[in-house]
Length: 295
Image (cartoon, rainbow, N blue to C red):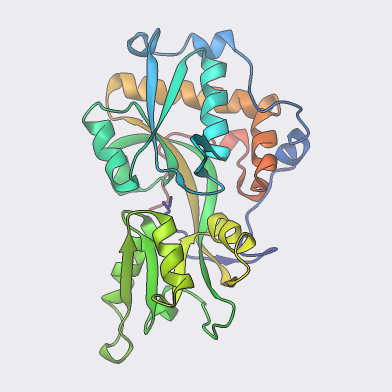
């Protein structure tokens, strides 16, 4: 959740995203299972601190298709991926539905061991946690179908009322952009504790547009006929799974990194992304790195 960082470029492909897809990921999407299989070598890398325990994972489940609630169950590609990582490493994981802006603080307080919630790997965040990069996304915009608004970059937000989720990179980008807007074109940033609140602000006309991760914008529009995508994705950057900024936390990050590479190799990773229609954000094994923030 962007939950996202920045590479100053606008990319265009079908819909709002235009992210490079490795051919190996496309091929691996034909895997028949999304559950993963135990890997003895990867499991051996898990720090002793975490062996024999249930790893508490913090996720804000208001961000489909990445993570959301279906009845009492948490679903999404992030959810399937962390479960497959757990199977690969031979560890138990337990998802906790946590407000996004409270996740990193919860990891610092030892309440959670993993943050798994569409986090953009940013240098400022790397001061608080380790990140295992596993996906990439951009920032996208959606509005009511009747809207005449255009979007060509952050400066075009000036003069509008923008709905964002609190604590996200979109929130930060919108607030920083507001400071640069001329007084004649004031940018009003409306922040909400969950993405659902931002969506409601747009649908009710309280906000001119919603500002969110690109693949999430596409998902929102696909499920609401009153919305449309506006412009192209900007600020493409990696997502990261967060672990504590401790020696054991760094070791766990390396274990997660190894597991994701295994999931790419055996086709599980590609199958999970294909299930949720987000293969365009997939990364090859060479891009599964620790703390690879762009900015």
